Image 1 (cartoon, rainbow, N blue to C red):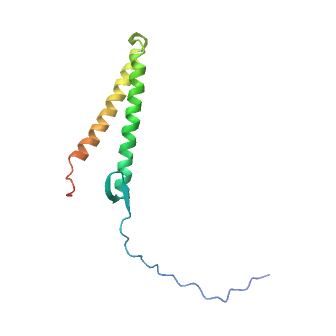
Image 2 (spheres, rainbow, N blue to C red):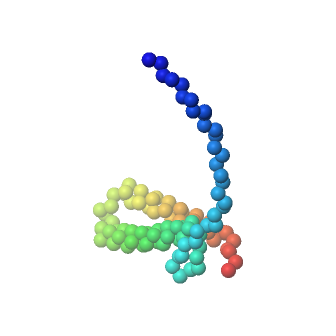
Image 3 (cartoon, rainbow, N blue to C red):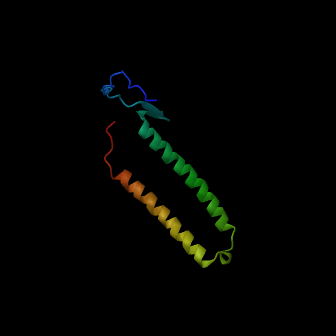
Length: 106
């Protein structure tokens, strides 16, 4: 059986209305005035980074202090030093980038 063609006219393309630009929502950061969400997120990331790094540094230092240096294979020691230096360089780049930017006037 042949199907009947629909008698409904084809849909016209709809024009989407653009909504007015919204002001950025402000989020509170502890002890600071209200700031945009992106800044609040970045602040949280930096705080978590410091918290995690400090915990890891304490743990690694404890492990190194309680392990006789003769027990650490030379290759492993070199790898650890290389990875720690890379981490230090990455953090130094972040510090330089932030320190080199102009500050917002209060």
